[in-house]
Image (cartoon, rainbow over all chains, first blue to last red):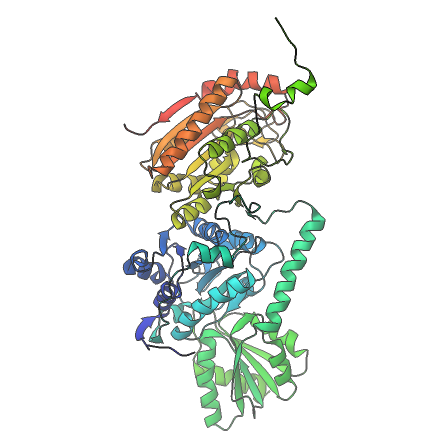
Length: 364
Length: 259
């Protein structure tokens, strides 16, 4: 993408999300403090986007209220978002299910910390199942983006809104405490104007903006008491997910061409695994890395293709083994799939990852 | 000289004494015959028509008997999760300060599961109108005890009457929100007689006028009956309401804007 004026800043991942949201022309942010994501709300309150662009920022009384504020704003066709960390995201699940059921666009950022329960404030990837398999009640899915850098925190904020409106579906950025808190160089997008009400009417003919005389009333609801009609709603939503699987799969392959062993990791684990890959290559091990960028839709085909030519795959996650289930479904026993995980807020070291590869696949 | 109108004469335009507001649809109400919801809907819709704000009004309906209110109001509406209507309304109004935003909620929705959202929207002084229908029972789910069920009152989950020692006291949330600085107008009304209907409609009109002047949150409780849930005829339920509900939930303004 051609950027007229490059603007580089040193920022935390959480701040990059906030600044990118202002610049992409977001209309509203509704949040609640929780470590390690509080900088999103803090940054927005300090930046006063209500003066810069007219963006609304509100600290809600709870995560539950915040996600329902997002529902209300999204129902008006506005570009709205929230962010939280694991226990807070659990509280938002009711609202997320309603948003998915009412087919509304919004962006949700989860800066994951270790669980279960109150757990720890240190980074983790233990919310993979919650993000990718539904989270709340009912048959629905989020489109899930997994950033591995501060740059991607900013980029996926823009991309997330784009995809949310394309599919009228909630999009989640599944980050973690490391990416949210670490500072890196980030190239920020150009400031875009917020959409006018006329533009919203055009882009979102379903939005509740007040009923003019010349159109039927717009209703935002996830309720359909007639089961036959509710089945149709489900079929329509499922068709969207199938379309996402065809059009939105994103992943990155590093040195996979000649690889005999593949590391599969997302987010922070992918950063660690990339270093482990270098260490492995220095030792003469032909190892590659596949990094899923969209966790739903999952890069099934790319993994299936690699599974036909490699000796084994090591799934590296900061959890007890979640994404590995999707990897195994993609691999269908064509090659050996092992897991290496640290959890409870521990980030594995590259040497640990390489050691696990040698122990579980090469030596075994 | 007395003249009884024929059916044909009654239908003539010049003899019309009542016309349905165009802010209500022609859909058949899902409420039980005798329930106050229909009247509360009608006066709210009439106010919106009389103020000519249909095209800039967004309503939020709850979970409960009025979950399907979006089928009855000829308005853009959003259906909220149980108790969350004030959170939706908060965002809608902040994103569109020039539009009119109201919630329509029952007692279980507003005063039990949605207590936090209610109190904080009131306390922040969100510039919205909350219409709160209090019939002292969970109507839609089949007559369970509500936060507003009277002491001793029977329900399917207090079959021997509400024992306050065991089940806690009814919550006068309207008096509670009147204490908060963000509310500008807090009133308790009813819709079971012609005069109460007139007063309730006037209160709704005032609330929308205060909203147009950015004066803060207006909170209108409407004490109503639930003849099905109370296991009474409509008439008995209104008499019971007058004898039992109104002494506990007295009608009238609790907080009015300073002149």
